[in-house]
Amino acid sequence: MRVLFVGNSHTYFNDMPAQFARMCREMDGDEPEVQMLAYSGRSLHWHREEYFSLRFALLRGRFDYCVLQQQAHPFPGEEETEQALREILPLCEKAGTKPVLFMTWAEKAKPENAGSMMCCYRRLAEKYGALLAPVGELFERFRGTEIELYWKDGEHASPYGSYLTAATLAALLCGGAGLERLSDRGCDFAACFAGENGLPRAEEDAGRAEIDLDPEKTAALREAVREALTGKEHG
Image 1 (spheres, helix red, strand yellow):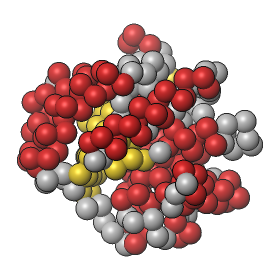
Image 2 (cartoon, one colour):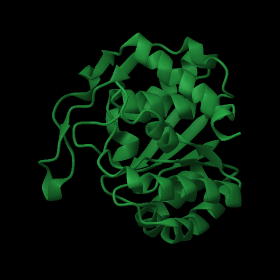
Image 3 (cartoon, rainbow, N blue to C red):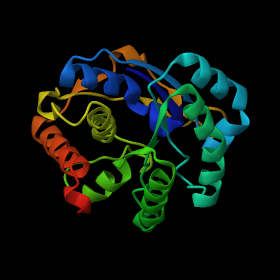
């Protein structure tokens, strides 16, 4: 399985695509190849405007799936998101690549923003026949619990948030079976926002970032993913 991730820091934070690949191996022994086009603060509109790099990746990369993540904070809205998809999705179709919409989450301090984001992703996934990774809905499920899914800035994912994201995508693309086989390994991606224009900058060697997570918390996250993908949360 070959997967291309397209997005911004909500995709690359805590080496999430690498966690996804590891989880696929743990679930069913698959050895996925992952590549990423993710740049800080960028929207799908930006990726659409940078058309030729995305075009080359999709048409020449022989990807099975393309995971698409829209800008989250602020969320550009459904109209702009759909405009970008109208140019990106034909590339996926021409390449025989299945699109996957990665639903992001509202800021920790602004739960009122969650509803429009979740509805937008669901409507567009249904309209264009894309797979949907309902990560934002799962973030809402754990809001206010002892499992902290937010990084210290209240916007990006904590190690648990990235674990949840990777597990949702792995279960979705591997058929949902084998979630119980996932290890409790996570990644704590040390970063600061002291870079140019306030963009993230790595503070350490990402190769030393793997950590052990609380097994009770990861078990709860895995169960929530299982329920979401088997439809218990949505009838």
